[in-house]
Amino acid sequence: MDLQLKGRRAVVTGGTRGIGFAVARALATEGASVALVSRSAPHAEEQAALLREETGAEVIGVAADTGDDAAVRAMAGRVTERLGGVDILVNNAAITNPGHISEDDLEAEINVKVRGYLRCARAFAPGMTERGWGRIINIGGLAARLSGSVTGSVRNAAVVALSKNLADELGPSGVNVVSVQPGPTRTDTFVTNLDRQAEARGCSPADIERQWAESVAIGRIVEPHEVAAVIAFLASPLSVALNGDTIVPSGGHKGSIYY
Image 1 (cartoon, rainbow, N blue to C red):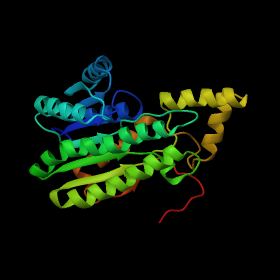
Image 2 (cartoon, rainbow, N blue to C red):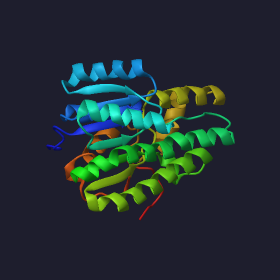
Image 3 (cartoon, rainbow, N blue to C red):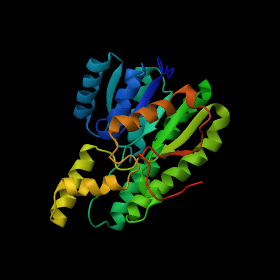
Image 4 (cartoon, helix red, strand yellow):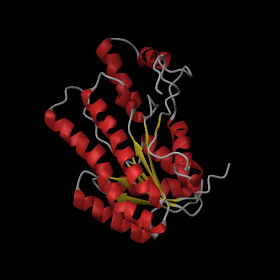
């Protein structure tokens, strides 16, 4: 299937590792120009160089802290200058604080994952609406539908609410906005968390992963490139029928019914 992404210009925040990097690879493979945004300039450029060599696409690395208003404005200016505009925004930047969470930690996570998403949308949406086409994809997480982590539930539920409000506002101008809630996904962070949980429980990481897999309808943990394939479709013109909706590329979370 031709996703009609050749010539499109995309920004992926949190784009140098995990799901973000897999999304950047998927978009670049489809012919889009991609800006990888990360807090670390050297890491962003290093990962961009890898994708340029692998895909032959135009891929640039740009440093920015999406938790800061001025940094986002500066990033948007640099990306727009280098790519000539932005058609697709994938908001993926996040910070997490494993273990005990203070109120300051909660505020910091919301500042990056909710307010940061809004900052980036405000920076790029005007250009999209002026051209009459765009896609904004906000990456949340399945914690929006599950208890067990106050910060996880709060920030990811807020991403869903933010996405729906933006979709209603921007949809008439040709800009579709969706939220994506991946379930457990085999990223480096997921593997690190397995090791930490296994040590705390006195078992092996394989035992912990087996427990996670038992909650997934396909019987295994989803890979980053499998989530990225869904997001690449959402970034394409073919996804026009989806706006304001929440997509859950989790492999199927057992037991729950949403309608």
